[in-house]
Image (cartoon, rainbow, N blue to C red; front, side, top):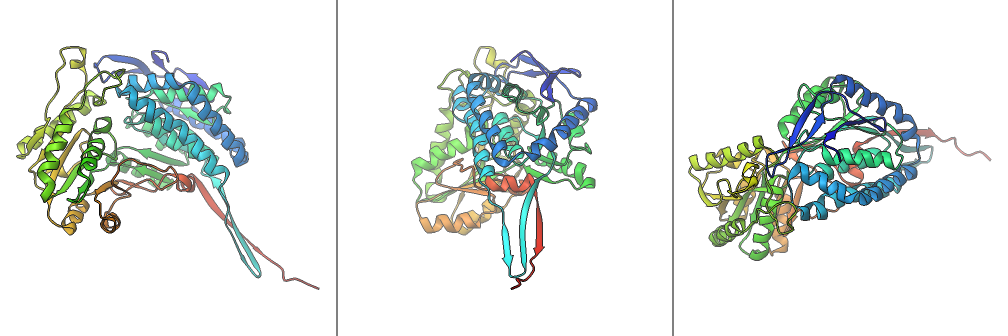
Length: 484
């Protein structure tokens, strides 16, 4: 894609508004200029979506599903362009981008195409009454996606919204506009009806994000990101009582019992703590380890952290990526400093790597393993969103569950044990929307995805997504008794 990123409205690029810079997290250098949407641009995008809505909503589900499959095919044809755009914005490794981010985008469209096309309706039959339900799209949906998995999470929302008959206006993060901009080009290239998919760029407060969620022509808002931002959006849409779906922050817990396969627990926990530089809402920041294996597990995880590789994105051996921005790097480093001030023992990391090349201008931090802090320390209470965890010992199953649940968040958790009964018992006791046993980030796209407490409202995935993106209408018909 070019060095200039435009909006995409009504099927065509729109290069309007002042521009702002995005930066390469690997070097800190500017990457491209992006047009920022003002109210006029957002008005145009919403108007285009509203104009396209009647015809798109009227299509049979099978025809909308066919469009989703064409999008998936075209994503695979533009695969390397999407990989390049994602890496330029995020600095993540080419291995992760090629095996997770872009393939999942295509899979999201295919999965929701199948689910929507095959979804049955409900009917209830009594002797004199027939009641059945039909579902109608919500209308124009504002899709606001974060910077950590920009393409994966955008398609995770766009796919079911379109499959259910809605039209969308997407606002990517100001840090990561590239891959969604390529998706808009792909949509135009396959002839997706103009206005069905629109993209506007900008920031949150006082910019495209605020203008979009407050717009009277927007019928619903779906958002993934920080809990504080979710709260702000909720207040903004309260007067109009717009439907909302939020997947928010997490301070996720992992429980490692002494009977666990320790090799698997160490490797699995390393993935759940350090994947994507810890910049995944599902990452584990709090680990609780049964005392008999606490020291061994901690030493092995710390060693695993020290072996992570700070290569360049194009190096297939790279296993550690930078933080998304200088601001976020400084936030993570502030928690490293806070941990020291609170008396933590730093088992690995705790600082900034030095390379002696242009990466020293990038946004890197060391993967970090901490111990020794009390449960009420800020490091153990607040979401850091970086490659860091704190490890605490426990003595009983009940204590482990109580420690894991002692959080304002409730998105995900992991349990490592070889005891089947304990696995079921503990998993059902954890206050989290998702619990993985002896694994992490293993997903069936049909299952519900979302959190409790400050981690979100609603569920995405399979029919749960389609339930959000459509409204049921119950139709009841009085049946006349038969006559001879």
